[in-house]
Amino acid sequence: MSRRTVYLSLLALSLSACSSVSNKQAAGSFDYQNKSESQSLIIPEQLKKPNQQSDFFISNKINHQGPIGERMDIRAPSLVMPIAASSRVVNESSVSIIWFDKVLEDTDLLGFIEKVVIEKIESDGVAFSQQEQDIEITLSQINEGSSSLKETNIDRKGVRTAIIESDWYLNQVDTGWLYTEIESKTRLRFRYQLLAKPHGRSVALRVSLIDSSIENKQGVSAELGPIDKQRAEKSMINSIISLVDYNYRVQQRENRLIRANQKLVIIGKNSELENAYVLEMNTDKLWDNMPVFFEKYGFTITDINDAKKIYYVDFVKPVVSIWDAIWVDDLPTVDLEEISYQFVLAPLNEENQKTSVTIYTTDGTPLAKQTLERIFPVIEAGLSFRNIF
Image 1 (tube, rainbow, N blue to C red):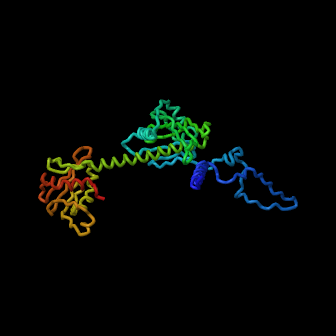
Image 2: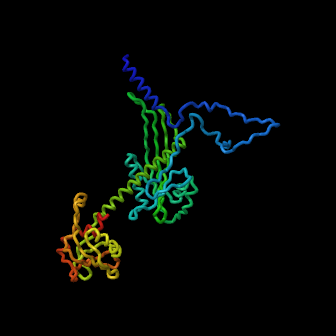
Image 3: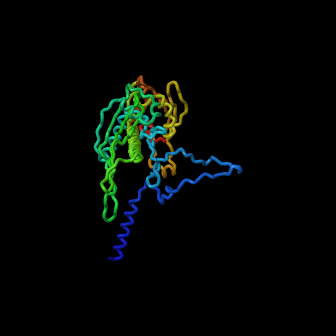
């Protein structure tokens, strides 16, 4: 046998040995299991007993039936991580539950979370079924194992629920290098329970492991222990929470793009049927933001009439300095005469959600439609307050 073959064989054996080490157990020996308890110090009656400090005293009121040595699970406890916006956990609860509060005002929260759960299961390639269940049973299951959940005082009238059960998740661990063998097979089935408060602004999600089995390489099957069950539940709920957070960000980005691409400004008529810009914006809000527009586009405010919503301005085309030319690709410029103007704002409907902006010259003549069309690309971006900040 060649030396190279020996080295490869030893390497394969070492890798196999490393892979068989359990991360549940402590490294080292467990000799402490066989150590007997030391006797208390006996002080003769004629001697004074020394003072004893109780700062580091270890009580004997512990679980003496708990696992020790190799049977002890040393893994850190798993936690539910509320990383999604407006999510919260129930303190001192071993139940895998998370509460979501409404973030997207135009979206049904229960339907949104339910869609994310289904998306998670489908992305894992696992089948699922949606269950019908009585509300009172669902409430008792949501509250099971944690009295602090009951402080929500949920009224059963108007409560909405959704229950989803997954098919089997299969996790197979292989060992070996040149020749692999199955170290273990784990099968898991989950139940996802959603409950929305009557106002619909808060939804609870609980993940429960309803069936499980683990099979070793000898083919012997057994149920998961309580610690492994809890870790599986919390791992699943944490993956859903992170997916909810991701979907929040995607939806918020789409909403921002819709607002950014929305045509807030068009050319139309004011209430006097004069040519004007028409904005999908509250008159008072637009009035408060007009100084930002003026400052950016070369208008200087000389006077205002707050009651009639009139800005009196002078216009001078901004001077493009050498630094502006270097750092800014294209400075927007309003193609108007350098004279004084009046910007008159007026509501166009009773709801005050549309505002006309009529631009007059010093003699009180509104700008012609051709002029409004010529400067529209700059004015539209400016009055939409796009790229202002």
